[in-house]
Amino acid sequence: MTDTRRHLADLVAIDSTSRTSNLPLLAYVEDLLAHHGIPSTRGPDPTGTKANLVARIGPAIEGGIVLAAHTDCVPVEGQSWTTDPFTLTARGDRLHARGATDMKGFLASVLAQLPTLAAAPLTRPVLLVLTYDEEIGTVGGPSAVELLLSTQPRPEAVIVGEPTLLQPVTAHKGVRSFTTIVEGRDGHSSQPHLAANALTAAARIATFIADLAARHRDAAAAPDFDPPYTTFNLASLHAGQAINIVPRRAELTWEYRPVPADDSDALVAEVERYAAEEVLPELRATTGEGEITFRHDAIARGLAPEPGGAAEALVRRLTGGGGPAGSVPFGTDGGHFQAAGLSTVVCGPGSIEQAHQPDEWIATEQLVACDAMLAALTRELST
Image (cartoon, rainbow, N blue to C red):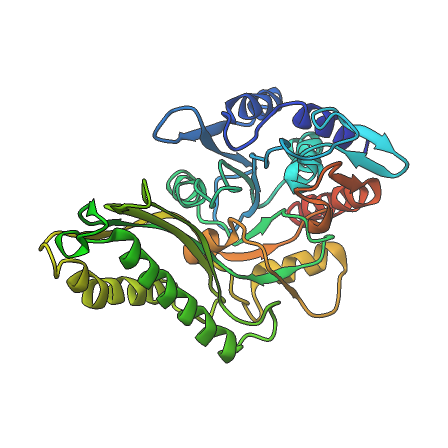
């Protein structure tokens, strides 16, 4: 626990809010890996200011176990902290800092296990995968999976260490977010027949999305989730300059969080089809001008249950946990690993109820239990 706490203090002191570079945090991890003779590979993002990281401890053979964590955190601005969010502060059995629960606590436990892993006679490898920008749409997840599979032998299972109180989670919704951009033609409000009102068109699309949301709400076909259906959110609609000008441009931002049984691609296709077949012709009816485009801003794949899956079975052996696997309403990188055909479970220390909050905290007993889980993993892979 001493090493885990020390690493956690170091990790939270590095501001890895999604808007900043995560390279300083990766450098910290790389130094520890190198100290134990463990090579690692970076996969930079298009800007070169962020990167994923993959490292292997143990033999270069198939059947390894992936320990996955994201490196970014949500901002602290606008929150009323009573502690320094970038200094680990102990209050009783709680350790407070931004990212303590989500999810630097898990990473700290992994790093504390490195000396034991490096010295162990592993018969199968442990693979560390760190991603960037998970908090803003699992942006780095797909390329992290590509980096893993292109540089390492295929693993058997993936443990994503998001906070679940170390209970196995085998299902969560995905997230898809979009900006719908409508271009019309401006004009004087007294002569709307000479203009193409982008706001009116965007409002029609928004209404269609709201109706689609109502249909899914009424279906309520996924009792394992709360709420038990695919949800939609109309987040913002920006248009217009003045009361007497017909708006030329409108931007609608929206998202949906599909349950695993729903076809995520089909949902946006339905909205795009309505916009193209119903809204666009009317937009162009007066002037012949008008365009509607859909920008796909972010995608987090859902995680579907795997009856008899290797990842869940592994976690149950390591923790001795029984009872049914759970589902969570938040998204993770786990869906990207599963989409690549890798058995995946979400299981990590801390509670999501403490994540993203002012004075975020993790219980020391959760870190102790995570250390024990990883020690059990080392033993299992050494026999």
